[in-house]
Length: 348
Image (cartoon, rainbow, N blue to C red; front, side, top):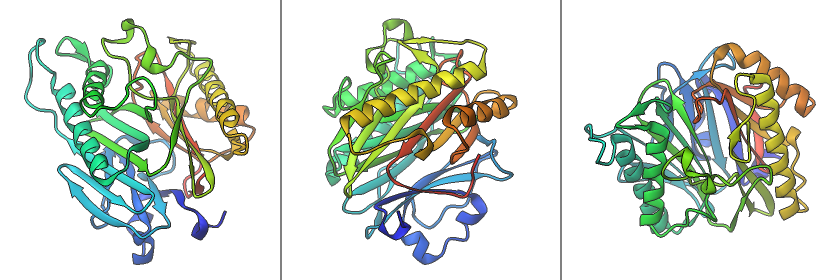
């Protein structure tokens, strides 16, 4: 598909290229996320672009994922949320500090920040009529650490679900795709892509739906679907959540990053099969997706890359980042998307 004809395009580029975008190129930018350590990358005007403190393991400089639309776009701000939108898509992002410390009987700082962030996002989307969310990206430090009597990822899940419920949104069906990863440092960062479209949540028959996880994984289940499927501009588009080595609801292959990578890709293959069943003309394939790969230990990146190439059958557009995964026994997490145009300036 030619870029001019693409309703939605994902571009992966080094930060030096972002700084050199022409005015015409900037006009089509919805928003994006840049990864560097330390954080503090240049923005482009009033565009909603997050700067997340996370170490890129691909290439020699900070990397950005930028989403482009082919509609007339305008920018805005709603409370802490910066956003850019057209007739079909809205991309937004925000960064919040965690408030003052709490006791074990109060909402924790991360829980409070998460609920506040999601309430602001839902308020914006409701005001603009974007009721369908294709996916969320969530990043915050020390995701596996226990504080205020609870693991921080579990605190995040409580705050997220409280905001869904407060805005009358389902927490068990028709939930968006998402990921939640641990950054090196910094604030709570959330980016999201919404659309005026019917979105179908795709589940994985190999896994228990995350929103049905048993209580051993926290007092509130994670609120996300394994993938989001939508028809936009006559094309089926798929947004796959962060996917790891989990079958049923249990982690497999503890300590074996190669086996965890293969299991993660087996789960993505199962999601593709289910998406193709729901959208028979889509023809989603593993080798036609764009991938973002979170690796807990940088020394494992070559193993993960090798396993991906062998499983998929060749190199694919991929960004590799060092990040803590939401379970301490998981070494790698992979997200992907397809059906939109892909321009990869940084490839595995």
